Image 1 (cartoon, rainbow, N blue to C red):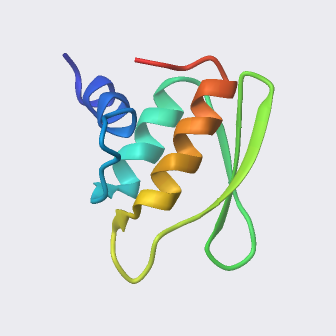
Image 2: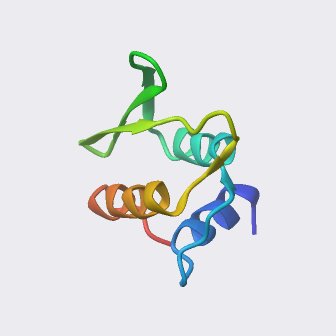
Length: 83
């Protein structure tokens, strides 16, 4: 299993995990064909399989919190990307 597959499984793990590095999530999205562009401040615009969303890059930490993981899970599900 590759790193991107492990990241995807971590996003969909129950109970919801925190501490997943944003850089790992972003790399997994790009590997699956997502278009990512910078917004203002810490915003990141993501388009994948016709679904669009805006996320906030975590700061000052590099890890994503549980709320953002839940949002990413919904986004990936809508885009048809599930483990």
